[in-house]
Length: 147
Image 1 (cartoon, rainbow, N blue to C red):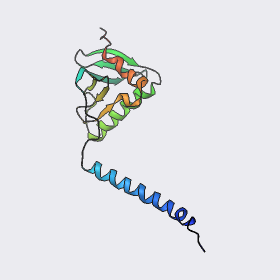
Image 2 (image 1 turned 90 degrees about the vertical axis):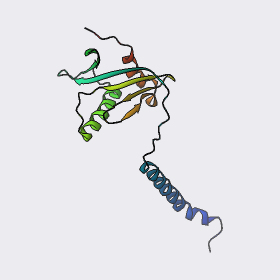
Image 3 (image 1 turned 180 degrees about the vertical axis):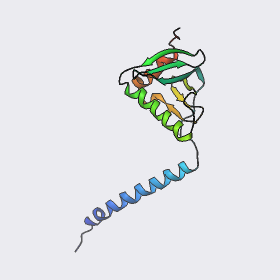
Image 4 (image 1 turned 135 degrees about the vertical axis):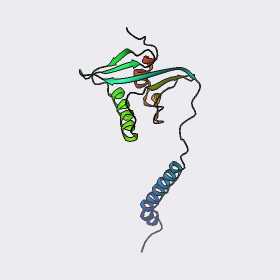
């Protein structure tokens, strides 16, 4: 004979699976509508167009697109910067976009930083990866071009 206390334990795993399935269906249907799930951006305080070019020594040159001058270089491992840039490069390859177009690094009134690709529409909210990682790109807003 089954006691009343044993019954919930038998159905609990099935209820959890059903709840997760409903959650997955809800997320998929929401994403299928094309509605953006990003928080609205505050006003741009500064925007800098940057190109990132691989160099033979393994570094990545950071070039101010308007001045057409190198402002910095990403050297060594630099995991966050390289990983972020790889994501943009992969998106461009997928969509057949040339690598020579600049990305837009934007400092916003609320202190947030975004890196965007106007060619593909991809936007990365850099502060969502933590202040240290956002600072990797944030410093590029104030670096002067070298001649």
